[in-house]
Image 1 (cartoon, rainbow, N blue to C red):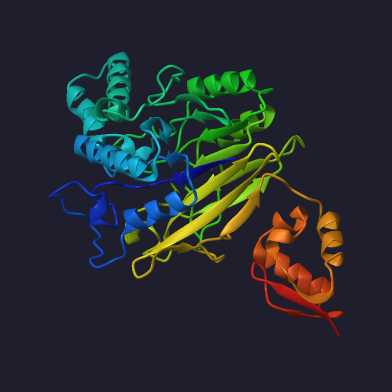
Image 2: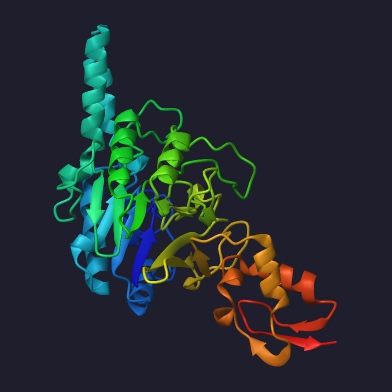
Length: 403
């Protein structure tokens, strides 16, 4: 068993919600004076759960400045030291905020008097590549993929004992003149991903893809256009399905989601984890209605399943267990990676023992653990309420007392 902390959208710098994640003597747009410690509270939880890895799903910085990368790396190394893991256990992908737009703007000045189409193409591509490689230049210790480097900046493969991580860069084509910072992998990265995931297809380790943008549209607490998914989302998901990827971890949306889906091929299910935002300010979280979040993924290689623990941050109470609602459609503890048929779930509910001894979520058949607490309670009420008095709700203890 291995436990992985998942963060996304740190936005170190001016878009951070706290001075804990800001450059010294630089102002941030949202300051919570007197708030519970964000970092110390996180460290306490990660130590308690013996986390062994730290995954970050992009947007580590606000504007990709050298100082933001420098101090963000310093903070991440402090966290790693505090929870007792080495810097090699920090695995990151980059997002659209990790592209230095000041560099992409230079191409406008260079091309001001040159209308040659070939020159324009070369200049824009090269300056964009420099802008997208800022992390390589500004981080001093964190080891981005090098031995198994991919075609986009800071993409590549990490091989560990229990899992393989394919790191993608969906933000490397983002420039200063984009109307929307949507994700784009490009054909060269998709071809690389297809080839590499296929080469590990028969490997029994858990296969994880770490990318910033989401592969398709998600619901949001308020009706809104989703203008930030990966352009090649359909092709991306086809590769995931075809080559047996188990888990996709991403961020960008600032709205956390976790679910297991079955694609049309009928092959094994794929788990998607959108990590929300670890520390972006209120203006970028539906005016603060969506909380900052973090997650711990537990991989159980023996039983081939995974469990996700979910936390939200409040200024008054610090980090606390998530409760399911439209702003955080997650349970605190979720089983992921399997999908059971309706009739199987129904049969297990009808088999629940009737006695005044309490039933606990932990001791339920796993068919009932792969649905949300809310759905489980609704189903129990629908099937058993006529026959039993139901005292309590899952995940707390319940009793079924014959009427």
